[in-house]
Length: 314
Image 1: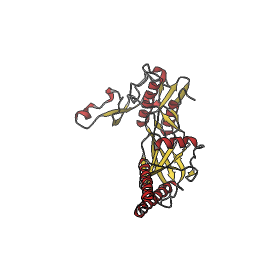
Image 2: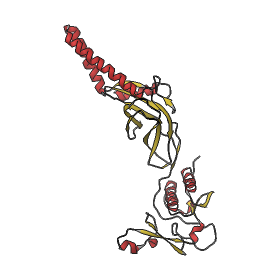
Image 3: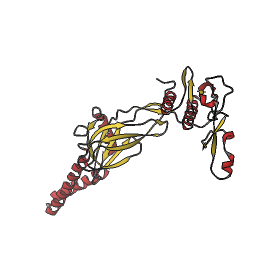
Image 4: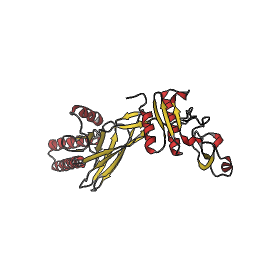
């Protein structure tokens, strides 16, 4: 019942505040919880009985419980009143993962307990704030498809100290973050070499000239590169790396992936871009008419992932 009423009030009020914001009379709402309604009903029944039977002890107990409930209402409201949200930050994630939205709370000047932060039906984060400066609160939110992602309204609620009343506020975070395709393992797509220096190698094959060393096995690594001697000695599964022609750079072409729909192909390309970055290989993308020249480094990896995230979308 309380949840239904709170949803109705949230729709009736004109708009929601946007970070940065200070919570106050205009954007904090409070209603009794289920226990609160039961408590108020009991106090009302005691009041009626005391009036009917002219019972002074009944009046004393009724007013005592009433003042206790009113004090709890003020404390619950005060946990949100004056709370200053001064900043918000996010970081890109892969589709289907939880994105962490970090909300920065300014100096609270006094402890605030029992605050619950959540986005719609996502996990609830319970936080007790102390009188410190700029406390970060990290709230997870479930992402969906690749591309731009904007979280729903942030819901801040509190029923401290007795659980008789529930105060809440809904905040627009005004966040817009990129979501990359979810990486999926699969065979490396055909590689088109930017130079005419022999036949194509398998991505991650690292040429055939000089042995560079061993690296931990990752799903999708070619079996012919596995160092079986180390595995037979119980040292784990490693893959051999070679330096040579592959260092000239490889170009991944989406048209050479035969199986799956567009989203599946983008997920495979995402996996191989990440693997190439992990192995410090030069890699590029060919997405129909859009070509990203082979390169390496974190900035280049992010550029490739963004191209995959917005492929076919504006």
